[in-house]
Image 1 (cartoon, rainbow, N blue to C red):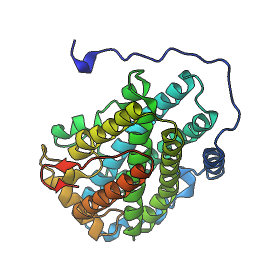
Image 2: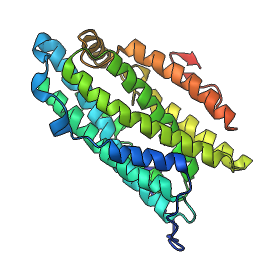
Image 3: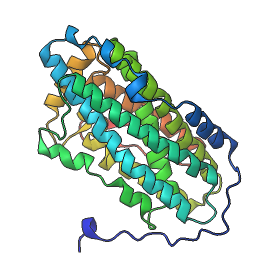
Image 4: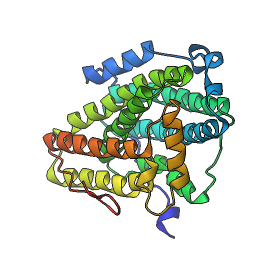
Length: 305
């Protein structure tokens, strides 16, 4: 049996005593804010007020592909978040506040999927799979299996996927918003950015909480998980297509350039790389303050950073 087909060892449930007391005021405030910030993609976005006709057909088609790709990424989160919530519930003495927050995070991810799907439709048609099948394994990560796997440290998972990944998504989305001059794209991304900021805040808050009690062995596992994610997932082009080294990303890079120039809510591939590099540098410093020393990461084309 190979690694891909090995069964996931689920954490043994130890539910009681059931503790629902507030233990982290900051995360609980994130949860309360998220509840109050509820929005509806159907009614809260100006779908009929778009100016997509100002762009030529080639640019609209490129935008449909770019926004479809975002939906693919978000859809991964829609399966990952429930798995992470279950894992928090299965483990004894895990705080209640992250459990509450993850329930609303999953709802927000569903809104993002709907928003990105509908914007792609408005641009000419949602694309349900990559034209180049080589991209399919990049998105078929089944991260929910790692979230549920008892052999994977939940603290390591949160550091890699909630602090680092959600922070990267927030940084990218802010850049997309700043380049969105088309009204519908701007309105959609403005709503999503507020959600992304909360998701990233949760990841970093929980990382800070847990790192204070980690021993040396666990710190090593956390750093290894973080490095593995960057090298295996990010360097495959999961968030930034130009990072891909084993796939020809020329078509995707051209799409980003067209969409960025038209103000349809994107930045160029080169700008995405710059954002990624800056975010790695930022997160390395922030992790170092928590006692997590991320080593230099080497990319086949970009070198070490």
